[in-house]
Image 1 (tube, helix red, strand yellow):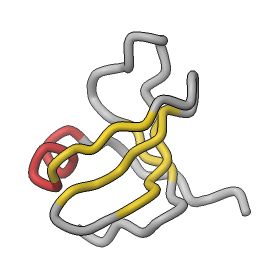
Image 2: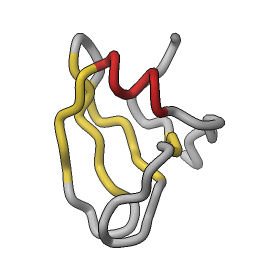
Image 3: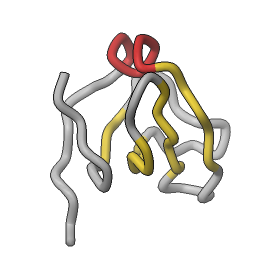
Image 4: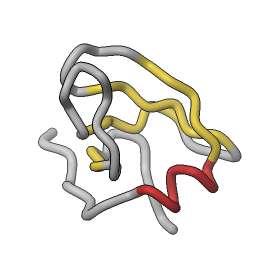
Length: 61
Protein backbone atom coordinates (compact mmCIF):
# COMPACT_ATOMS: atom_id res chain seq x y z
CA UNK A 1 0.00 0.00 0.00
CA UNK A 2 1.44 3.38 -1.01
CA UNK A 3 0.75 5.95 1.71
CA UNK A 4 2.63 9.24 1.94
CA UNK A 5 3.25 11.82 4.65
CA UNK A 6 0.58 14.54 4.60
CA UNK A 7 -2.27 12.36 3.32
CA UNK A 8 -5.53 12.22 5.22
CA UNK A 9 -6.86 8.71 5.82
CA UNK A 10 -10.05 7.40 7.38
CA UNK A 11 -9.95 4.43 9.74
CA UNK A 12 -12.72 1.96 10.50
CA UNK A 13 -13.22 2.92 14.15
CA UNK A 14 -13.43 6.56 15.25
CA UNK A 15 -11.17 8.13 17.88
CA UNK A 16 -12.90 8.76 21.26
CA UNK A 17 -13.23 12.45 20.29
CA UNK A 18 -15.56 11.37 17.44
CA UNK A 19 -13.28 11.94 14.45
CA UNK A 20 -12.28 9.05 12.18
CA UNK A 21 -9.90 11.08 9.98
CA UNK A 22 -6.15 10.95 10.55
CA UNK A 23 -3.19 12.77 8.99
CA UNK A 24 -0.07 10.71 8.30
CA UNK A 25 2.96 12.34 9.95
CA UNK A 26 5.48 9.49 9.56
CA UNK A 27 5.64 6.23 7.61
CA UNK A 28 7.76 3.09 7.88
CA UNK A 29 7.19 -0.08 9.91
CA UNK A 30 5.00 2.09 12.15
CA UNK A 31 2.85 5.08 11.28
CA UNK A 32 2.57 8.27 13.33
CA UNK A 33 -0.98 9.52 12.91
CA UNK A 34 -2.54 12.79 14.07
CA UNK A 35 -6.26 12.93 14.82
CA UNK A 36 -7.99 15.63 12.78
CA UNK A 37 -10.55 16.20 15.55
CA UNK A 38 -8.47 16.81 18.68
CA UNK A 39 -4.84 16.76 17.44
CA UNK A 40 -3.83 13.67 19.47
CA UNK A 41 -0.89 11.76 17.96
CA UNK A 42 -0.47 7.99 18.04
CA UNK A 43 1.99 5.39 16.74
CA UNK A 44 0.32 2.43 15.01
CA UNK A 45 1.86 -0.57 13.25
CA UNK A 46 1.67 -0.66 9.45
CA UNK A 47 -0.24 -3.97 9.58
CA UNK A 48 -2.99 -2.45 11.76
CA UNK A 49 -3.33 0.66 9.57
CA UNK A 50 -3.54 -1.36 6.34
CA UNK A 51 -6.18 -3.61 7.88
CA UNK A 52 -8.43 -0.77 9.12
CA UNK A 53 -8.02 1.87 6.38
CA UNK A 54 -10.95 3.24 4.41
CA UNK A 55 -10.88 5.41 1.22
CA UNK A 56 -7.96 7.87 1.08
CA UNK A 57 -8.36 11.63 0.69
CA UNK A 58 -5.59 13.63 -0.96
CA UNK A 59 -3.84 16.41 1.01
CA UNK A 60 -5.39 19.87 0.80
CA UNK A 61 -2.01 21.63 0.45
